[in-house]
Length: 271
Image (cartoon, rainbow, N blue to C red; front, side, top):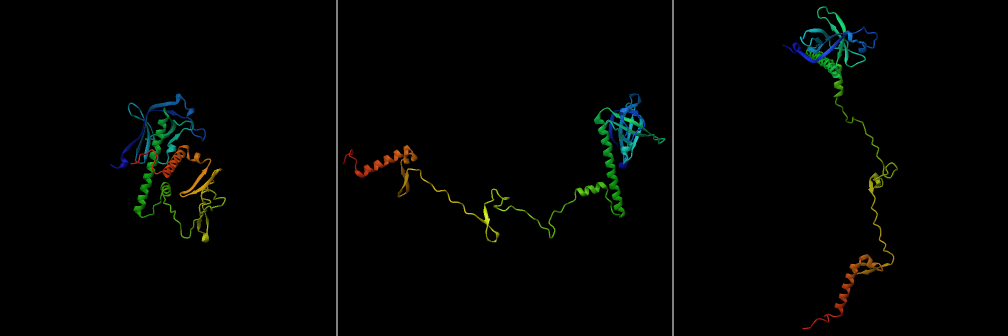
């Protein structure tokens, strides 16, 4: 048994309704708003089946499973066999065919829920795409077996264009022009604008850093040269060092004077 002999069920809806539809008055399509409740002729189950490339919509009795009407959907003719209503997404017009006499008639198909109508339309669309893809593969295989050149289909050419590898490398003789901002110009004013200047030969020369600012002593203080460097004396010298530190220095200087005046304190006993 080949894969084409297996019948697949693509979609099932438990309850749909069929209506008699008036002839199409204009080229705008059928309008389900013109269908009357009195024109309802059937309520039952809908089933979409596929066998190879052929697909068909079957309308069956929900209890017994007897076939009421059948709508074949040839590949590439889905919009003719199943035509959407122009004023509702839940309704369609089916081109039903009598298997014995091959006579056809148009009946209105109505779904109770919108999502059921959407799934019905998607099932037919997916089957048509799958059948068309299988047909293209079979045609390409037959062409390759016979030694003829394979003519890719529209879908194959689109895929080849989409996945075509692009060569972005530079060809021989091609150049790239890069506009760089020059330091010190109005366009290049910024963080690195004055970093350096051009020297001989166009090489960039870094500018030397500026020296640190000189220190100016406060008013009323004069520097005094000592062995360890300069010491500032003036009316604000104690305030600069702090009172505690000035007391410490005065105490240490007085002790040093006492040591210079007498080697042995007067209060000590001599042995």
